[in-house]
Length: 401
Image 1 (cartoon, one colour):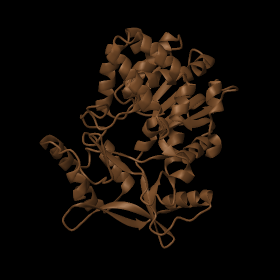
Image 2 (tube, rainbow, N blue to C red):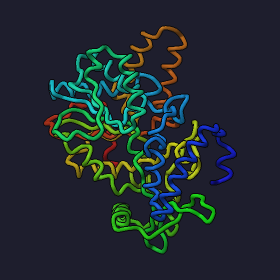
Image 3 (cartoon, helix red, strand yellow):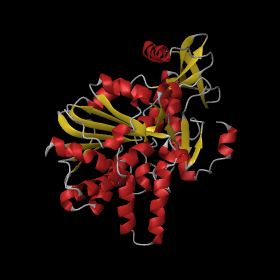
Image 4 (spheres, rainbow, N blue to C red):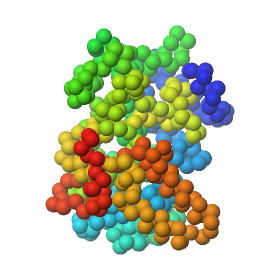
């Protein structure tokens, strides 16, 4: 652990520390039995280990009481804009169109999106939530059962795995790719190494590099070829060699419709800038960001920025075409943020509610907030025409990929 990390972060309570120590003990046992684990495996354990991982344990994750705030947690404007974008697609596909959300968070997005689609008369046949966390699934169920009419709630279904039967409709993922367990690589004398998590002589977690296997090395060499450069000695960053396989797994059965991914990240040449020599990996603990992923495992959200060029490649390999790629601010404005804000402003009950709406718009669109840091990528398949707003197509920056 880096002493400077613990000194500037909130002090964990006794229950939190005990929780982290239980996961730490499990990690130690696994490393002692099987040897150092790839960082991607360590990240997977920290986020998803049953009962102990960040997303599978019971603490509040989202909103002001959690560790970070996602766009749907700010209020309804984000979901209303997404609903406005996908509504023509659902209408075009007809009565058997479904909506699939990957990772439902607190349920805030599902609630606002379903209410917005219902108001427009374009409710999907089923609203599917692919949620691996039993804890989050229960929170979503309670929230939606309270917030929605029985008829609307009856359309919500939870999935353990992607649909196996062919389906048509919309797949939506907000801040999902950044939480996929990432591989960390490093360059040494022209060779590709992979970062592992090991134990030092006193049983503490430490990071070590080992020669990369063919999959990781091949993924890094692909990036180098695409950028027409070689990474410098000592350069370290992240890569998702499994992304094409993950995309195939979640999207193969979507035969007609669109996918919308919103996340923070860059096109490839910006992601792998020469001066970004330690990648984009971040840990989030109670609204404090830091860069020590070994500190308090299980209590931190670990994320890495998205290489949107890699996401586009994975979508293409799965049989989809990129329909639009643009910063979140441009996406939301093209999706009718102004109209959504004005109608919500008129409905607001008091001045405090109107102030919160104005703050929402700022957080969602200002460049130094989410507006430029977050990007939206839309994919399409099996549709003769993709009915996206003209303003969205005009703002497309797909040429930058």
